[in-house]
Amino acid sequence: MSRLKKLGFIDVHRTTLPVRRRVRSRGIPPALADNEIFYAESVREAARLLGKALSPATLALCDDDAHMFAASLHGMRLRDVSMLHIDLGIAATLDVPAMGPYFAVHMPTNGHAMCTHNGREFEANPIRAVVTSPGMALTMQFAHDSPQLIIRIEQEALARHLTRLMGGSLSRPIVFEPEMDLTTDAAMRWNGAIQLLHAEAFYPDSLVQHGQGIGPLEELLMSTLLLLQPSNYQTQLLLPAEQAGRRVVREALDYIEAHLSQRITMNDIAKSVHMSVRAVQQGFRDELGTSPMLYLRDRRLERAREDLTDAVPSDGVTVTSVAERWGFTHLSSFSVLYRKRWDESPSETLRR
Image (tube, rainbow, N blue to C red):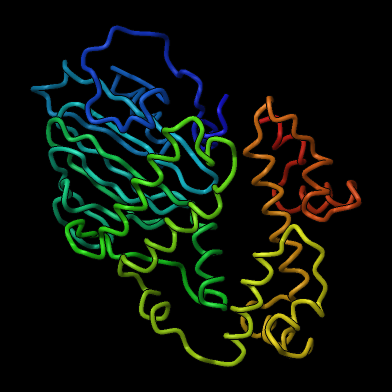
């Protein structure tokens, strides 16, 4: 199995027996053409599987077209960013009572869908996307022949990335404005990031296909969304407070991120920001509620999990090699910390 096919939130193995296709899915990006997750002609089965890929939902069809229903889902995942393509074929209403722990940008590639989300009702079409936020209800009334490309970003990853960009912890959950105008000059940067994702996922010799460059590509997508799409943090992000403590923390976080696989001491971090050890420690306590070395340990645990999740049998990856790569010299201690954080052992993650 390719590392890009390990979605995690839905089983990527064929979910139904081969069936005669009523329709051929339209507009599937070439990068996803061979990554079919499911094809279903049963409304109940399609709703169940869409609920695993998105969030538990109900699906209702127009009675006149019900006999023509055929749904398909294609998808791939980097680490915390996934690209999905959903095609219901005919007019249908998808009702999600509460979105799961992720953000999503729904971009119709044809047709349109009337959407209700975050107190707003508007039409999504090839020039206007829907940006969803976790925990909120979403209703989409799909017109006939209205497939969608969806970029899914896990909530924890985006919050962690925004924390690093701002140099301080978040005081409230991130909430985006639901409408995204894809015709603006600024939106071209988002479109460019999506095209880069397509190219990296499509070409077999790309860096991403070999497990390299995934982090920077995800950071590009997350930064682009945070900077371009209005949210309850956009003003604060574009005009950061120039508090000394926050500036020190932001620079220290950048240093830690750039040297995660190397030996880092408290003195190294302090020297990188031209401040005393005590000042850096105080800044982390004030802005993040933790210490620099605990933050460093947690980030290394997260990178170790990423490596274990990305691994495929042909890589020959072992738990020991991953632990050592990220500075954990005692395997037993690493396993205890890992299980405490994710409620599973490193070897269980590797086998999935």
